[in-house]
Length: 95
Image (tube, helix red, strand yellow):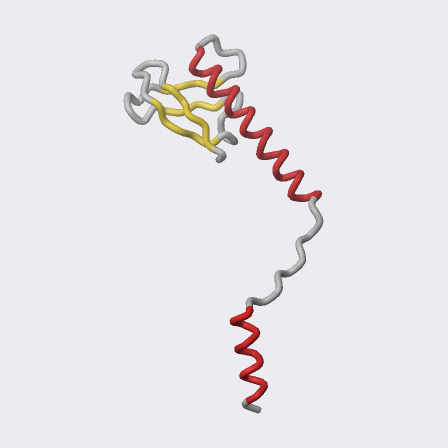
């Protein structure tokens, strides 16, 4: 999941935004009350701090998952199902 919950500082409604967007200097308008929220690492508001911390954690988890996926050996191709094998055998018999 690459989105983060954000609580509006004015109307207290909760909405979601992508973790990749929530970085220092990003601004977003609340969908409910249309106040503009500014996201900064040194923000004093607890709702902004929580959203920035969550976004940082989600981005870290996504990077670790991507690194693990790249380091994993390539998976071998799965064997065809039994129903597929019978179709190929019956096609060979008809020749």
